[in-house]
Length: 431
Ligand SMILES: *Cc1c(COP(=O)(O)O)cnc(C)c1O
Image 1 (tube, rainbow, N blue to C red):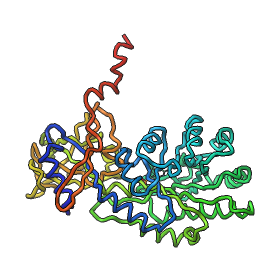
Image 2: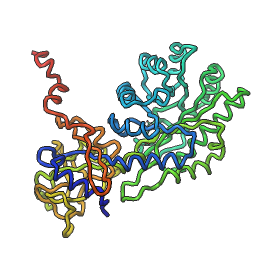
Image 3: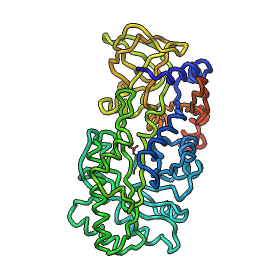
Image 4: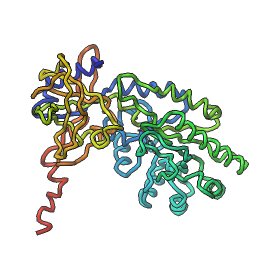
């Protein structure tokens, strides 16, 4: 089933040239959809929870500013993400800095700005000991890995026994070392766990948060004071990529959390979340021109301008990251007609650059368009520079009263920008 608003936007984009021969691939963000997803998140958790958006899921300043104006904070994991979060206008008090590789300089800057820092490990805490001044406004937390297990996509599972993230709680001596870290640091007041992501069942994520909650209770009991005052429960709500339905919902997740961790919502701990994919994935799509069609070995192939550069995970791990694809004609109208199994391929020069294999679609022709649905997070916003393909333009859209409006979020990268990024200023450096 095709979302009628997507069809209206594709039609409008083709009519106005936002999608066409000059702009053969572009990303589109549903502004009203983003607002309603944020509202659903706030409604599900109720008041008093700081929801930070994981910047890596849609690292575009206008998108971040939209989220800031809707009352969200921002989770950043690199100096670049911190920079764009500040440019987007997030209050530093609503920014959380996570990363397993924070440098001394990055830590000093975050502590200076009063940004919350979640240390990934005990060595990082020791660095913070040397950098943190007594009047520092930053909340400092420690990330733990409850080691509750793996979901269906190994690369998305952060709570495995050997995950690179956080202090591995079930390792010998680790729990005692974490308790000791809090005993010695009265300013260490938060525990952080981001248990999993796409492919992890809600119960697994909730089990990890339950472990984290019990650890906080244990630490506060050992200290005889409520030193841990907040819990950052991470993001990771999985997204349904198989059809239009938004499932699981934030409300489903809150229900599962409430069952697994009865004390979590009783107000004793301030809560912070870090959702990314679940807020943006279904609020964006990619449109791409069909440049050629051909047959090979009995297979029909449509060569489009959307491949691994904008759908990297889908192309490299097609089993784990399938996308819904729809066909549109040269005027941007949904294509009708008998279905034909076709490969929807991209422009990159490697054989695996196919976003959908043997997909049943109305027969595609040169000049048609394809839409890759649910690509609002981690797709067009984080393109891959392979083949020196340009970053695509990104547009926000609204459809007030049937009137489609597009707003530029990012222009497509120009050839001059590509040359500059490719060392043009140092062209003679090696001869
Ligand atoms: C990536 C990430 C998130 C967001 O994950 P989603 O699956 O997009 O919700 C949250 N917290 C941390 C620490 C992350 O690395």
